Image 1 (tube, rainbow, N blue to C red):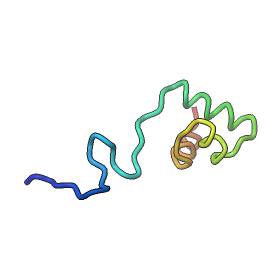
Image 2 (cartoon, one colour; image 1 turned 45 degrees about the vertical axis):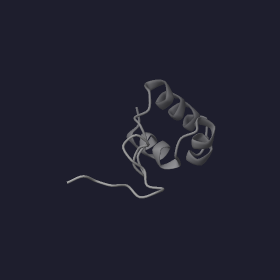
Image 3 (cartoon, rainbow, N blue to C red; image 1 turned 60 degrees about the vertical axis):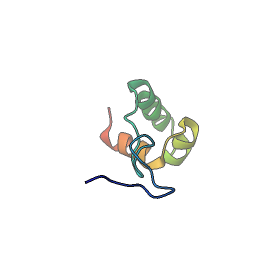
Length: 63
């Protein structure tokens, strides 16, 4: 069965809503370092250009 997309829907080439690519070890290290310096998840996300929930997920996972 072929899947057809409606206008405005994300396809595989654009990613699916709510998903982000896996971050590089350098990006994760930056998230953890900024968190150690007292930055909040929202500020880290804004600085690195990633979703806030992505930052929270990596912070919860730790090193």
